[in-house]
Image (cartoon, rainbow, N blue to C red; front, side, top):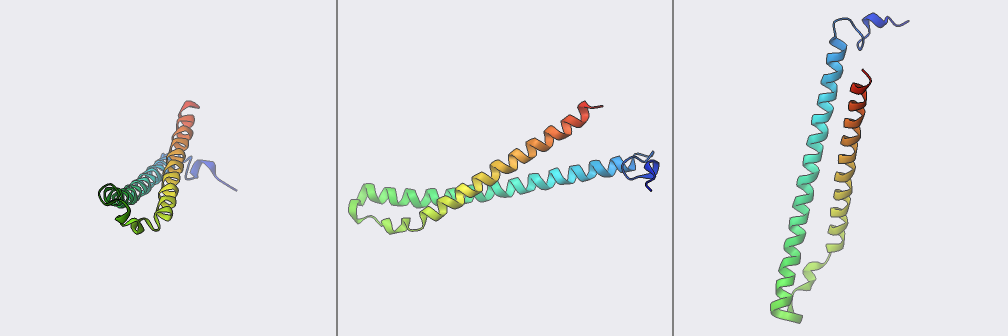
Length: 110
Protein backbone atom coordinates (compact mmCIF):
# COMPACT_ATOMS: atom_id res chain seq x y z
CA UNK A 1 0.00 0.00 0.00
CA UNK A 2 1.15 3.50 -0.74
CA UNK A 3 1.00 6.25 1.85
CA UNK A 4 0.26 9.28 -0.36
CA UNK A 5 1.03 11.73 2.42
CA UNK A 6 4.61 10.44 2.65
CA UNK A 7 5.17 9.74 -1.04
CA UNK A 8 8.16 11.50 -2.64
CA UNK A 9 5.97 13.61 -4.89
CA UNK A 10 3.11 14.56 -2.57
CA UNK A 11 4.82 14.83 0.82
CA UNK A 12 3.67 17.72 2.98
CA UNK A 13 7.16 19.24 3.18
CA UNK A 14 7.39 19.81 -0.58
CA UNK A 15 10.67 17.86 -0.70
CA UNK A 16 9.29 15.56 -3.41
CA UNK A 17 8.29 18.52 -5.52
CA UNK A 18 11.70 20.09 -4.99
CA UNK A 19 13.40 16.86 -6.08
CA UNK A 20 11.15 16.66 -9.10
CA UNK A 21 11.97 20.22 -10.11
CA UNK A 22 15.67 19.54 -9.58
CA UNK A 23 15.44 16.50 -11.86
CA UNK A 24 13.60 18.59 -14.45
CA UNK A 25 16.25 21.29 -14.26
CA UNK A 26 19.05 18.72 -14.60
CA UNK A 27 17.38 17.17 -17.64
CA UNK A 28 17.01 20.54 -19.34
CA UNK A 29 20.65 21.40 -18.61
CA UNK A 30 21.70 18.03 -20.00
CA UNK A 31 19.57 18.60 -23.11
CA UNK A 32 21.08 22.06 -23.57
CA UNK A 33 24.59 20.62 -23.30
CA UNK A 34 23.71 17.93 -25.82
CA UNK A 35 22.34 20.51 -28.25
CA UNK A 36 25.44 22.67 -27.78
CA UNK A 37 27.65 19.67 -28.65
CA UNK A 38 25.55 18.98 -31.74
CA UNK A 39 25.83 22.63 -32.86
CA UNK A 40 29.60 22.59 -32.33
CA UNK A 41 30.03 19.36 -34.28
CA UNK A 42 27.77 20.61 -37.08
CA UNK A 43 29.66 23.91 -37.34
CA UNK A 44 33.01 22.08 -37.37
CA UNK A 45 31.94 19.69 -40.13
CA UNK A 46 30.40 22.47 -42.19
CA UNK A 47 33.52 24.64 -41.90
CA UNK A 48 35.75 21.75 -42.99
CA UNK A 49 33.46 20.99 -45.91
CA UNK A 50 33.29 24.66 -46.87
CA UNK A 51 37.07 24.94 -46.80
CA UNK A 52 37.51 21.90 -49.07
CA UNK A 53 34.94 23.22 -51.51
CA UNK A 54 36.45 26.70 -51.46
CA UNK A 55 39.97 25.43 -52.18
CA UNK A 56 38.81 23.32 -55.11
CA UNK A 57 36.59 26.12 -56.43
CA UNK A 58 39.48 28.58 -56.35
CA UNK A 59 41.68 26.10 -58.19
CA UNK A 60 38.99 25.50 -60.79
CA UNK A 61 38.69 29.23 -61.35
CA UNK A 62 42.45 29.78 -61.64
CA UNK A 63 43.73 26.49 -63.07
CA UNK A 64 40.73 25.08 -64.88
CA UNK A 65 41.17 21.40 -65.75
CA UNK A 66 44.43 21.21 -63.78
CA UNK A 67 42.54 21.80 -60.50
CA UNK A 68 42.88 19.17 -57.80
CA UNK A 69 39.29 17.94 -57.93
CA UNK A 70 40.40 14.68 -56.30
CA UNK A 71 40.17 16.63 -53.03
CA UNK A 72 36.40 16.32 -53.36
CA UNK A 73 36.59 12.56 -52.90
CA UNK A 74 34.36 11.59 -49.98
CA UNK A 75 32.52 14.91 -49.92
CA UNK A 76 29.22 13.06 -50.31
CA UNK A 77 29.78 11.16 -47.07
CA UNK A 78 30.65 14.41 -45.32
CA UNK A 79 27.46 15.92 -46.69
CA UNK A 80 25.46 13.01 -45.30
CA UNK A 81 27.11 13.47 -41.90
CA UNK A 82 26.16 17.16 -41.96
CA UNK A 83 22.63 16.23 -42.94
CA UNK A 84 22.37 13.71 -40.07
CA UNK A 85 23.62 16.29 -37.57
CA UNK A 86 21.17 18.87 -38.87
CA UNK A 87 18.33 16.37 -38.43
CA UNK A 88 19.57 15.52 -34.93
CA UNK A 89 19.64 19.21 -33.99
CA UNK A 90 16.14 19.72 -35.37
CA UNK A 91 14.88 16.69 -33.41
CA UNK A 92 16.58 17.89 -30.23
CA UNK A 93 15.00 21.32 -30.60
CA UNK A 94 11.56 19.77 -31.19
CA UNK A 95 11.97 17.56 -28.11
CA UNK A 96 12.86 20.58 -25.97
CA UNK A 97 9.92 22.56 -27.34
CA UNK A 98 7.62 19.62 -26.61
CA UNK A 99 8.99 19.40 -23.07
CA UNK A 100 8.39 23.12 -22.56
CA UNK A 101 4.83 22.75 -23.85
CA UNK A 102 4.25 19.86 -21.43
CA UNK A 103 5.58 21.85 -18.46
CA UNK A 104 3.48 24.83 -19.51
CA UNK A 105 0.42 22.57 -19.65
CA UNK A 106 1.04 21.55 -16.03
CA UNK A 107 1.07 25.16 -14.88
CA UNK A 108 -2.19 25.89 -16.71
CA UNK A 109 -3.97 23.09 -14.89
CA UNK A 110 -3.46 24.62 -11.47
